[in-house]
Image (cartoon, rainbow, N blue to C red):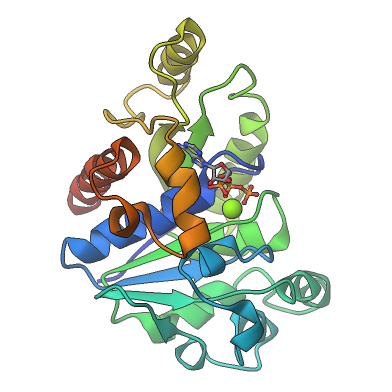
Amino acid sequence: MTTVIAVTNQKGGVGKTTSAVNIAYYMAKAGKTVLLVDLDPQGNATSGLGVDKQELQSTMSDVMMGTKIIRHVIIPTEHKNLHLAPSTPLLANTEVELAGVQQKFTRLKSALESAADYDIIIIDSPPSLSLLTVNGLIAAKYVLLPVQAEFYALEGLGQLLETMKLVRKNMNPTLDLIGVLPTMMDGRTTLSNQVYEEIKKHFPGKVFDHTIPRNIRLAEAPSHGLPVGAYDRWSKGARAYKAVTKEVLDRVSQ
Ligand SMILES: Nc1ncnc2c1ncn2[C@@H]1O[C@H](COP(=O)(O)OP(=O)(O)OP(=O)(O)O)[C@@H](O)[C@H]1O
Ligand SMILES: [Mg+2]
């Protein structure tokens, strides 16, 4: 059975794409067949995997418009077991067009039915509680919530949890939070540790044991079109994502 995980937080720049790309990579490394769905018009997961957006004939925009099936959009990556459903800024238009369409909430869910032969599907969401994000929440079994270890980390999360509640009530009763991932941790600072404790208090039992440190290699890797594990596998960032991926897989199989 396919497990669908949406990496979501409506706040920008908290490490959604970095987490989606690197967890997808390490799951593929672990032998799972993985589809990474770029559901953000910024297309950062697409370029982060070294795909030239100019060259793309078909993207998630076509899927969300209902003009192509996802099979015709998916491309292999240079990493074994890891495929990508890419996106470009065109996806932003889709959002507007979808608004007037029936099944506007379930387009992605229906589309993913024809990708049911993957073990894992990871969705990278945009930084908003938009129609695209809601499509992700409805298509997913799990939400993975990256939270940047900074003073305002928890602000705005109430809104996301409220949206998840609504989605559960109306469309997707089994949607579950698989875990909260503190990102850009600066282990030496009191602030990072305070925020970490705060996050744990707020999400008892949900915070992963491993956290993601602030690490320059993680920021450099996308400019080389590579997951950090292929760019510098011994870096702190790479090891952290490898450890977190194991935790995610453990939680999936429970
Ligand atoms: N642990 C980290 N250490 C250092 N830099 C990081 C780390 N995680 C992410 N970054 C960098 O921070 C920026 C934001 O990260 P990322 O793109 O993953 O966030 P995002 O939540 O997907 O952003 P958006 O909301 O715009 O989609 C990127 O430049 C990324 O390379
Ligand atoms: Mg992103």
